[in-house]
Image (tube, rainbow, N blue to C red):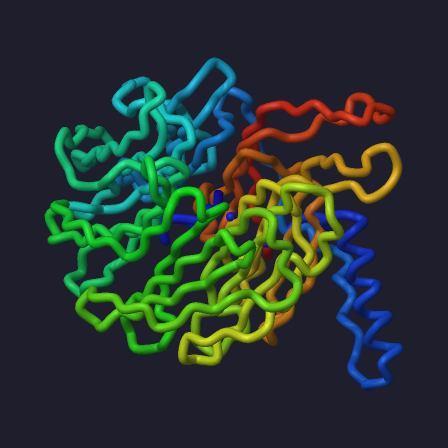
Length: 443
């Protein structure tokens, strides 16, 4: 499940992704040279591309099949942490306070319900300038929606009655779509019989009015995601819904905001070449090419072993909410988490992705291990891979970016299941639950 900060919500340094990534880049350069087009080859990565450095790891903080989110819960000026999902001892939801240097201490309040298949959203829903907590997920085998209001000091009180519906496989983003300076919520996921995209319009005091944006039969949708962004440059937030439909085609629907929070379907597009269509995907909205409009970074999850080059990439916005052909990017291929931020202080959004990576030869053919990729934005609609070797990657996990040590640079937090290659002669690989923190080393 894609995590994009609580933009919502969301998944950029570190070490070249994999031999596959290097091979793909080499093949692209060779193709450019053989074409005789006179185009320069892609620049080689600089000698020192290590943007991140491992700070800490803790199995006690680790979860899979859940979510993590960063935000200042106790109003002390640093980013604290909420973790929800399946831990080593069972389902859990915990919050951790930051000492300002990136050291987290668990709050023993037990005031947040344990969740699996969880989504964590930190957002001020009641307009009192502190971060509240919305949890969607599974609790006691039932889908749940739980809202907790911040008292202002980092303590939380659950709202017993609210109108935010529960779904499974939840994905949540927040933003002001009605222009009343209140955080509205866009929630996508599965009910008993349908996949739904539901907008919850906030009156500014934490009271929500539900509006259905899209719904489909449960059996017609293989995966989904929904995001908020100003696609047509009219200064309001539109809605993009993405899913794989029953016709095995990736579908992208753009719902245009009239400025008052009323939406109409403007266009539906199907992905062009390069998409492997038997599985799931996620996407992230950001200005990739520096032209001040919102583009789409697409992450494809392949559920079976296939050649993966070109299956992930980005779609460039023409400024009116219409998108061109998919431009390929080399990323992990299964159960991918993605997060985005300016990792190298050049005012451009970079991408960090992690997940499973299929093996293409030897006894591992058809199997996969965990891996990571960092793609640095070159400001011309192209990306350059950086060293991601210090990040083991994770499946069934989540990532979050934010400054945890007060240096105003985005650091990386990762949790999930990572590969243990303790028997290189075995065709199967075991995993372990892990939580890791990486600090940004950019000068």
